[in-house]
Length: 223
Image (cartoon, rainbow, N blue to C red; front, side, top):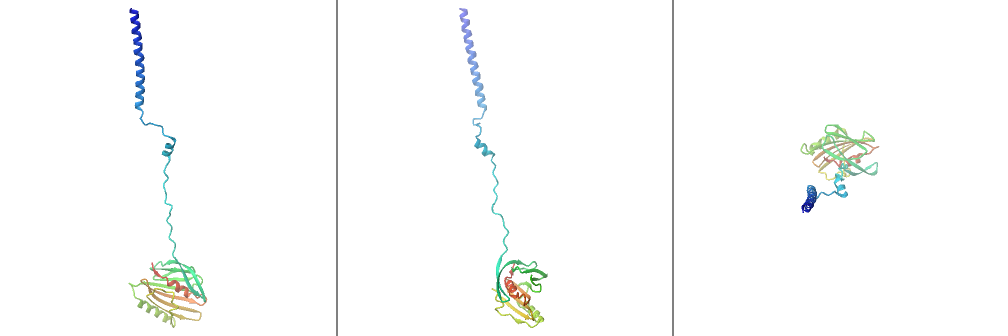
């Protein structure tokens, strides 16, 4: 009887030990699962590639370009031949004007208040340019100065409206010429765009660039 009781107690103890071991293993596994984040999944290849991809900064495809120099066609007559050329805008360094300059000429400062536009073909062919704001002087005073100069040069003859036809939208204008054997001197004064401009042109029969210089002078305006 005691032997049978001992055997039953041994079986019961063994069962308790087995149940306790299984319970301990399940508890440890549950603890491990609780410590891991619920959403801890290994990122997919696409997600990894997306994370590693860096955005390339966008650049403005439109680059700032230097504005083109304004140009204008200039028509004139030289030695009886009609000519048409493209002139480019030029600005006086010391005076407050700009104009359309033909490529066959060079502009430079002669002295304060006076510029020289000289022919590349003949440096004795040129146009002196003097401009003054209307707020500083008046047209009649500059015209008188030009007339005095032309009278000192020789016997001036007034230029015809046809010879001054290149000038458009002019408030006042007057011009004279003194002819020599193969050379001539022209003086012109005009008022336009708030400027009073005085021109002195020296030309000769070989170059005959008076019309070209007057055509350029007709484009003079304030900067």
